[in-house]
Amino acid sequence: MIPMLVALVPLFDENMTVKAYSLFSQKHNFLLNPLMQSTGLNDGAARVEGLEVLNSVGLETLSEEAEVFVPVNNISVFSDISEQCDAAHERVVLLIDNTIPPIEMYVNRLQELKEQGFRLAIRKLAVTDFENYRPILRLVDYVFLNNRKIAIDKAKIYFGKLYPNVKLCAGGIETFEIFEELKKTGGYQFYEGIFYRTPLTRENHEVAPLKVNYIELLNMVNSAEFELTKAADVIGRDTALTISLLQMVNNMSVNSGITTIRHAAAMLGEKELKKWINTAVVNALYADKPSEVTRLSLLRAKFAENLAPSYGLAARKEELFLMGLFSVLDVILEKPMEEALGMVKVSSDISNALVKGEGKLAPVMDFMVQYESANWPEVSRQMILGNMDTDVVSDAYMGSLSWYRDLMSV
Image 1 (cartoon, rainbow, N blue to C red):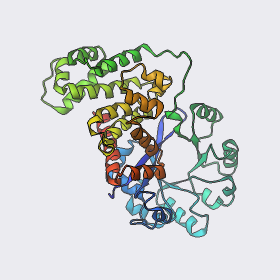
Image 2 (cartoon, rainbow, N blue to C red):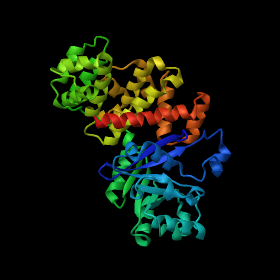
Image 3 (cartoon, rainbow, N blue to C red):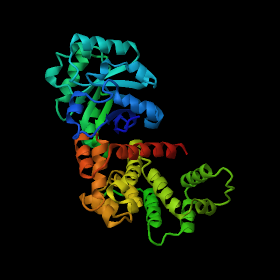
């Protein structure tokens, strides 16, 4: 696969369970190749980039069961998509937008793709487009309605009357409060936006006792006086953490012959034990939140660590790992980030990056946020300023996806 930038945007149901992902990709630096990106006149333009990603890393690396929405443009839609797609067609939804006009040649091509077993979705439609796009709207399975740009409730009524079989996806949701309001009215198959990673803060919110215990373990493992045996004793009092530790060690060495929790901890060694505790405890800490929040935290942690050399911070990769790991702590504890970080022992650089967006680590955090939103123009700008190559960034992100898959399979 040609190195490219790849971002997965989750689509939730009303229970905050991830039911699908939109896969957005960018093959070249957006700013260095503006003409190529706007016209599609680049190498492989007649191919669907998202399918290259799926075929290269495997659908299971990106999503175990959920559908994957893959964008096609007005050129690649005429390529041999069926031949390019190794994944089961029913797991792939071809995502088009208003750059594909509702004229006969495109309508016929979309009809052919439907007959080949693909499902179709459309986004970026303005209210003024609705009538003109009737020939295409009769074919699509999903329509994305952007909550920030149109009167989404009125649009829902329109589609309910004229296209009752079309599933609606509410997009552009910025806060959890907006999500709750949309959920009350009902009628949406999926919900998309940054709301799931936006904290819902409550006055005088008490942190559950179990979470307090986990935070104490985090503080223990990240303190300068960290002792492996004490950490092992604390782990031994939590069944879930004990099982997770034993699985980790057994995965490393089948013939390990583990006799005690301290023995298992010693086999990992202090450095790896600290990293495992941070990862496993955060996973447990986030257990009552949508699984995507845990996934986001862990992906950011590994992505930040992988990006460290590109920012001249190779010696601080463990600190970057923690920054990514704690970047949604405000969401988990339902407290402002400054107050949430006050409960755990992190460096001032981590705190400054997450609370103020300042300091040596802040550029890495900002880059990751732009990347996971598929804001390719801004990502490209930062890559130019940082002299980062596409293949380096691509390897860093795809490596974090593979790491997360392996971590969850232990």
